Length: 164
Image 1 (tube, rainbow, N blue to C red):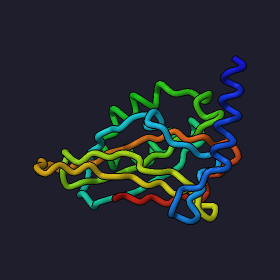
Image 2 (image 1 turned 120 degrees about the vertical axis):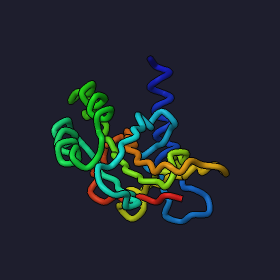
Image 3 (image 1 turned 30 degrees about the horizontal axis):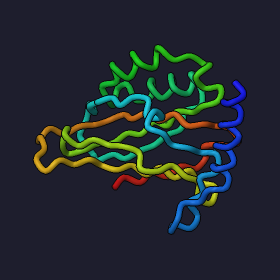
């Protein structure tokens, strides 16, 4: 237990003191990214035309998550998304928020990962990378990607998404 507390203090010190080299304004502060922050990725085909969407929204409670589902269930096939969110409860949102990222791609072979999460001038910046194979499929795909981030000392009022 004492080791966990000590490790937490060291981690907090590093997070508050670190700046990304060579990119002024990229301060990590209290946001961290680890592979396990990517909670789930759902293929969620739109019910209408593909428009190349790249959207992001912060969700801070079960009520907001249910509202998101109700507002988008007629625009996407969210059956697996709904099954997943039905397993969550309010405790999940005590210290964390979910970022819902919607990406439409020209191929189902294109996958995504988080390159960076950082604060810049009060804005949460989310950078994703695209893993594009040399040979892909011709099926268009839409993805709902859920990221869990700490909401300690932070409001998700202003968020920007960049996809490389």
